[in-house]
Image 1: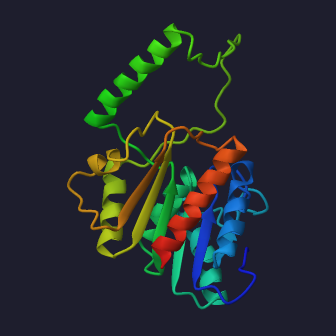
Image 2 (image 1 turned 120 degrees about the vertical axis):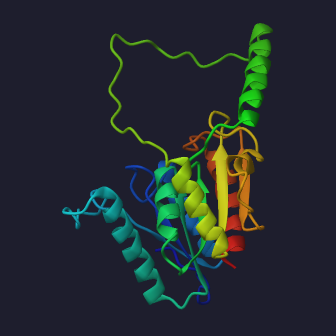
Length: 249
């Protein structure tokens, strides 16, 4: 728990594990974000889902989706019982974003959701922008301005330890619509260019949904998915702290 040094917090934020990374987040990004939010008067709860980090498995007889819902619910309960809050936001990176997003649909206490690199679906706009980007990159390579990172070949490809499948479009559209109708504010952050390459792509992904000023998006094309560089983490944390305070107020 990261608490403000002075005064009672009005806003609470719950961070959900990114994949199998413990509650400190990739390269301790969750820690940096929680401390930055505490400076802004927000109390933040970082916790480990069952079988990750410090947490044991409590609901072994339940399927993964049900376990995740119960565990996130327990974290939100703890925050709500300990503090008198005007709003509770929830979020995370990658799978943590999608788990937070799915949970928010059924809990009326959630007033804001922050998703870092969640589901993304290719649109016609994505296709032509991707083609133009690749042409530009190849042109720079031809004149020795750009050089891609060489990937060393191995005798046999290594098996992936985790295979994550993003949420289906039908499910994400249903949840986003439900949150907008309930006046929950949802903030998306996308990094890189592979899956998402323009701010307008989010609206193109859900053309029949009126965001009604409840949905915002940031696109950080030069940033790595796990924020490997320290300056990237600082930039992301600064951006997220502003967005979390805004959507939770």
